Image (cartoon, rainbow, N blue to C red; front, side):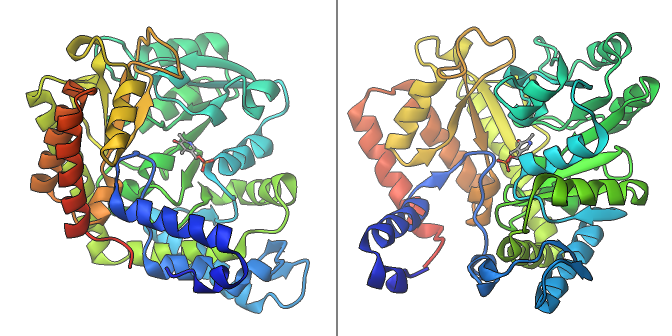
Length: 415
Ligand SMILES: *Cc1c(COP(=O)(O)O)cnc(C)c1O
């Protein structure tokens, strides 16, 4: 995008916006939760709908002048239903966390019990962390991944469900490279007379494309983000059976939010429309193929992957054995210097801190959007290995940096 109009009134913000556009163009985004939306989604998100109040839902708003807002929200809803095969969809949550809040507020009372995966093992703040409202409002017990295999410890989850007697079990994760046994978790929830919330924030697009198993129609509630693997712009979404529709809708508005961000809902409608095209399935399959190729090559370079590989869009690297002198943060910083942007991450059995953990999380959704295939991603794995093997070697970093420049030119992004 060009920021000429912003520049006329605001040099400082225009400078920063252009710098951010250039940063995205000139670096390789490998943060597993990031992606690049189309110019169409960008345009819809910056539409005049940012001016519009539309509290309520299509056909039942608290403000006049909502006919176009209604049309757009209905399109977003209908497209989402088709994409995920959901009975009922709410597209108003401002973010994935707000989507989860919508479910908790609808189904739980303060003091009720949440059973969720530990943050250090791949969970999310909004699943009961003490720094989040969930940890402050509800009683939380956590399950783990098996530190040997890196897979969810389903037996442990079942035992915890029996013992802790939760009101809701949360599945769906932020740093988990494997498929999830949704049915098994639903069965554990049923046995404990608890709800099951499957938070597919990371894999929303993979599930829509059918390249990842789906919890829709299995779990009582499914929440997602719309900016990670489905390229529909920043936001959240809730899916559920018709029987919970009214509870969910009223907990999102007026329970947790005021006016919906109608410009973002326009972005969601456009992005969902794109995801309904046949090319999206190819994209999603390529995301997974790329993550597999990335993981394979990193293993050839001696890196060890949590769970030994991946079924989805990300790999989680545990640096402790292969690079005992390089922490996740040091690797993240050295890679950022050469234009490869990813994040340090805790690993199962973490022995360091969340600020300077032992692993790095690497995702392929954004590079796949730029057109990277297995060959290109394999070369990126080589570049990552070179830098992490020698994080203080300036010659290596200059060399890799140059190659990153060439790759970002070859796989261009925004004009
Ligand atoms: C990313 C993520 C979310 C959504 O986060 P927001 O930043 O609030 O949109 C929710 N749950 C999980 C598991 C996530 O990884």
